[in-house]
Image 1 (tube, rainbow, N blue to C red):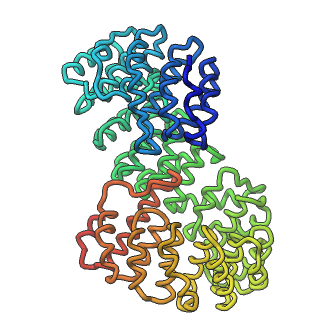
Image 2 (cartoon, helix red, strand yellow; image 1 turned 180 degrees about the horizontal axis):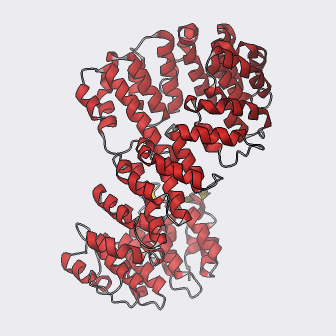
Image 3 (cartoon, helix red, strand yellow; image 1 turned 30 degrees about the vertical axis):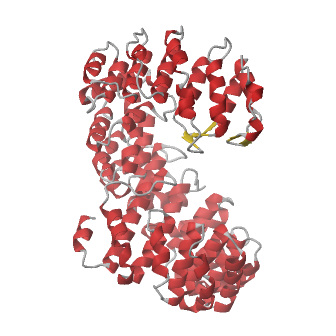
Length: 614
């Protein structure tokens, strides 16, 4: 076995971590039944969905190993299936064809004594072939998981004919019926409603769902793009008598909420009902998804408040998520709750970190308690959050001057956030100038940049600010340089002396740097001619895109070329944000749509019909 392994120049082939010289020894380990060796192949010749040149050469040996007595046959089939579905690093890799060459072996394994192996064999046949072999379609099995795997394979190979689907729908077990309902065109809704819940226990055994984050979510994701159907199914399952089904349904609502803009409004009422569910996990996921549902969550505000009053809001609890949801809605009851927690003796901030980060002027009742807590809060992320919240709560010259002495003390331990906050507070923070000036030479670039911005905003010291920013723009890179560019934009025309440094950065490979150099140039010069073409490629959802669109909106009619992309952003039913934390996707998408709408109003105010649809 494994004859010819040494005849391949593995050193000349690549996998995920470079030269594939280790592959022969790992394959020998698999032959000896070493589970760690098989896991290693899942990280090298297949890595997070990508396959490589070495993968193609390894596949014939993997197929050969299916006959070895000590190997994990089901695991090997799982690896071969993953390889067949992998994205080749090189388009000419040909790994899927290499896997398909093992079809005779996979067909023989349909008679294996292990049901898991039989199910895995059907899966590999389904994902690697072009047509369905009659032996696969006619396979009769006593195990419902295997029968369901055959149905899914037939669907993947376009062999799920109406007559076959009808036969599969008469299966005595719900899992094969569920598979048939999903294979049908269109899906059989009544069967999905009835047979998905009793199939949840068996779905994790199904190779097609083996890597699923959650079985019920996997079912929802496999449906065609019929959002009404998805919503209907989820709403029904959220009312199921089985708590595990309700939990899975509530958990799965995240997918439509994060993908389809109308979904949040359609599902919020049902999620609100689940906030009083007897199952703790159901309440937790309902509150968590409401916290990330954006403005639509306002419909559930009273139910969220009831939950917050009924349970302790500690780290990773349903009540903590309910509090976060209310804070995102800027609900005054959340401010009252937080003020009471901050004023308690002793104050306990555990579980409140996210809520503190959401505090703003809407929670003014928290200000005095937070200021008192500032020196008592443990150093680190929690104190950073409190410093930021104090800065956002301080309005009015007298209030700012009162809090500046405490902020000055924080410059020594948390200069990054404190310099930013002091700059935002403006001239009323003049008492902190000694600390800010001292930090202009800080060894951390981000601190020096924030200090430069602050001495300009607080004291109007242009020369001190420009000296630091010039150094960081010309000598820095990545985050440091893009941060310096954002600070330079805050100087406006006062920073015009640095404008000549910026055009060469417009086409930077770092998108944030490219956008911020162009936006800074506009802020410094007011000249739209070079700025508009530099920003247009970045009119897409994301933080750089938001900055680009804001500047295009300020530029107005000369940015008319951006109108089609802006219109698409505000009229699409699909979310535009596809990165970062799911907890913030909807809020970022709503901000993106707002920014694009405002830009449209300024660039092409005659397009009132577009604005009315937002």
